[in-house]
Image 1 (cartoon, rainbow, N blue to C red):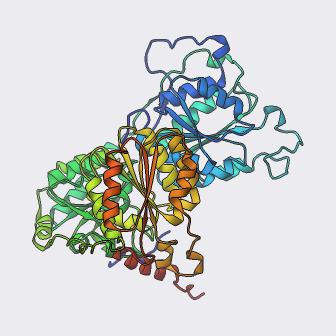
Image 2 (image 1 turned 120 degrees about the horizontal axis):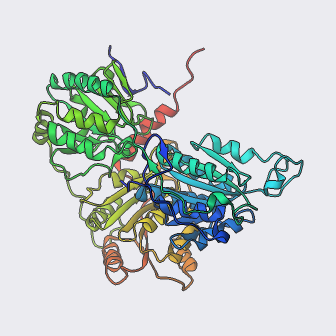
Image 3 (image 1 turned 135 degrees about the vertical axis):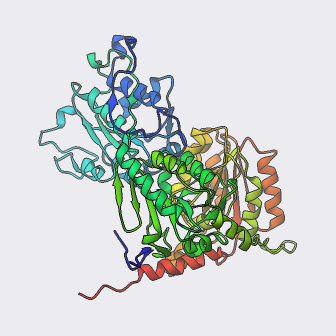
Length: 605
């Protein structure tokens, strides 16, 4: 059967052990030693929640105060191991928790009822799409108001308080509404442990009058979670490995491709072990960049259909067998459903399921276990990588700039490449930065994050705040377009308050360039701002900040030298002025294919 994957033909709808999303059951007893007693006045719901957050690896909580959460914030502030970071708006607080979770394995934010909850909702949806455990805490109404006919402020004017809860039900894996103290301990612990097990956001609403009240259930220090790992079905695992080994061992030039779900499956190391053992050429899907070491001897680049890195697509699509570990084949990752892959040639490995060709399928098989066992059963075969080595031609360098020539984007990223090291991390905003950053070669230990599945413009400002707060030893390099920056610019202010030293490259090309290449119109042109002056105004003499505007390569070189030298302890904001039509060739190709997919006429009825 000649069925295609990611085609229009069948368009079917690293972290610590505690703070990362383990699986399966929760045990509330970890050792025989009783936890210490808590002073009676401190045995409150608010303190219990604060201690739980610290236990799972959250040392920073991103918040926006509102009258329903103020007492709760008092108790979070009182916890010595917890740092409360006030953000300019709830959306950015959610994005910051998202960025924090990408580094620490779990993040948290606190907002107020409905006006705050519905504002943060977009960020929570993004975290859900990216499989990030995020604790979204909302200060809720007074517990006495439930079940009455009262109308509260911050609501839509109805006596029904469930609107916010209903909105969160589709973008969180568990919802806890705490409006009495008797079951508060159980609800809070169940919510937090579920977030860790499922690697998804959860929603916790806490009545505004409950946080400060002592209760016997909070009289001892909370026992640390002991989350038992989920186990593979041994018979299913053995059968899946045997079938996959038979499938791959008879192939002439098999390849393996890593996908974004390697992270949630905790299978990045197992994937590399499979590459080591098999000798297969190894690629990654674009949303898996940063999950697999690019210095691996058999790494051939990013597989992204028509916009793959050089010679990668040719090797993957010409293979007679390919194993995809944790893929997501959406319209963006498949370049408008145009991948030249055949289902009968593919092994698709999801976090707990394996499908081989057009069948068979094996459930209850964990990706990590499957990849490790498969590595023991494969014959060494480096044919695909040898083919890649034979056809590979190194990419040419961008044309050298003439003196004072207007700066080109390819020159900009040539210099960003030189900045990368194990002490840096790259945050790529939705837009042309997706494509330009995808071509960066990441050194060992260099972090890399972007939001491909949800693709919410403006995400990177909050994510940079959260990621930099989670790993202060790394210097974050954020590449943000002007259109995206206008959505969430305010929280550069919070970066300054936190003393962060990130380098932000604001790429000013006068509009929503990624949308221009999908479908152009006057709505894609934005009002130009004086971005450096804006950041200077936000700085206002408080904190360490340095800004500059560059028009040519000479000014860019000088700016980077300053940012990495004299101003290395400052937040550095470099506004890069480029032509509105200066885009990567990959965006031009990708945009036309996504446009074609978007504009398909309705099927005849």
